[in-house]
Length: 378
Image (cartoon, rainbow, N blue to C red; front, side, top):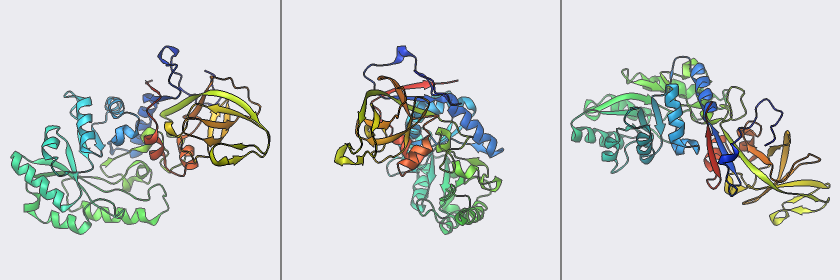
């Protein structure tokens, strides 16, 4: 594999691990993940860092991610679904008694499973709080839980008035060990948005209703908004996995996922020729093309007008199809079979997200499973 001349080079998978049938190769650098965790912990300045490993660790493998972050000192994790929490509890094993918060809270019929896996529900409605209290009575022991309060996203959570009603009702809280009160910022990627300050003010009022509980407001972007947003615990997600906190590349955050695919063919098409389905691209000049063995079945959006990294430079996407994409290679010396970096230290996650009209979170969870995966550490 040719090494790019940039300061950040792509990980290389040993030849012995490669499969001739695996066109795409996704390499997950757990050492870079650990460095991102440390960078976020340094920025959080004393607040506990509780990684979000939902959606199978943003598509990169929750078991492997949590294993590495446990080694870095993480002891609390967030998942979205009950099944994700059960799987994480199993992968961590009895020797690593992490606190695992389930953001869906206590779903109908899930109480026994939640208790068996020792998961902590994040309660986001008064009916959920009532179900949790009933579960605590049935188990005849306090149920650790978190409360999610909606401070402006209008997506999930108790209203501030509902939180006050809960705090004022000893009956409703009976059996519940409220160990965390949390909310979620809707505009943290834009530090100038006044919604951030408004949400902070609302959350600060709610937090005072539960003085014995810890507090959490900031996810990845919120960590960088300032000390007043960090409270006791921060919940980074996408920035652990390589996404910049402001939805653009950030030198403090390292690439974790590297997606490569081989060049299958090199061809020259004259000016005026049309490329791909529906003749979506008409060439303005004679163009040398590298046809690469990856496409939207591997997680590259069909509409992406981004770039790949090949022969030491950025190479523009021209078309993306289900299994193939074409890049403009100019006069570069590129051999058939040579791997092209589609995502990684040189083909940046946030750039690909922007080119696809989305965010880094979606790019990561869309990465296909048909290729080869490898984990590097250190």
